[in-house]
Every structure is written in structure tokens, then in C-alpha cells.
Image (tube, rainbow, N blue to C red):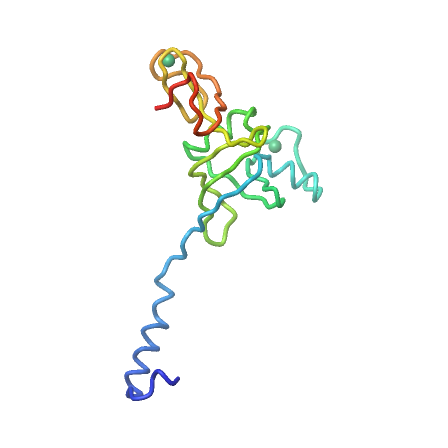
Length: 163
Ligand SMILES: [Zn+2]
Ligand SMILES: [Zn+2]
């Protein structure tokens, strides 16, 4: 209490009241994370490890299993859409940047890369007729042809132009 020497008791009481009142109005902040791992169905993982009941036909609950075997549930955003619809991505070793929300294990992906043969790669979908990149599979916005998954070493020039 040395710092309060010289202040009136009323002033100290006011300070304590104000500092005590503040936390209730503050919303805890999401945690920025960078994870390494792969995409799994959390329901299947919990079935394997903890014998949770699992119907043969079920809606997959996709999430990330990190190298340290920590699980995060994936929020279905437009950037994460590919992980929900393209099973090719479930084979990849991934580096995921994102946000984890307070008191949850919910992950919002903000960036993703893969590691292939020890090299960091970009993952994206591409129309080689229109030279357009997409974040999720589907048909090209321009020519309607299906786009293809590209895994390209990061920061390396290639014949594929990147916008
Ligand atoms: Zn599943
Ligand atoms: Zn196209």
C-alpha cells in the first residue's frame, strides 16, 4: 500500500471501487493461435478414444487435431469451407492460423498452409482457363468449369500465376 501514502481514504476507496467495477463490462479477447495438425472428425475421434456412441451414418463434426493431440472444433466460415467439403485436405499436414474464443475450443481459421516433404505449401483452388484462384472447391465463377486443388511451394515462382 506504499503507493497510496498521502492519498485520502476516500480517494483510495474511489479508486478501488472503479477498478473493481471495470472487469464486469470487459469482454474477454479471443486468443490468436498458430497450430500444426490435421483435420479430423471429432465424433469419430471421441468414439475411438472414449467409446462415445457413433452412428455409422452421421454428420461429421470437423475439427483440428494438433501434433500435441489437442482438439479444436472448426467454425464453418468461407475460408474454412474447403475443409468441410474436400476430403483431400484431410490428408494434409497443416499450419493453421486463427482465433480461439474465450472459454471454448472453437477455432476460426484466418490462414492455412500445408507442409509437404518438409516444405511449406500454399493450398488453393484454381481455374487454369481463367487464371482465377478460389479458397474452396466448386465451379469457376467465370467459366463454370470445376476448379482444381493446387498445392504450391510458398514463395517459389512457378508457371501458375498467383494474384
Ligand atoms: Zn465423422
Ligand atoms: Zn474459369
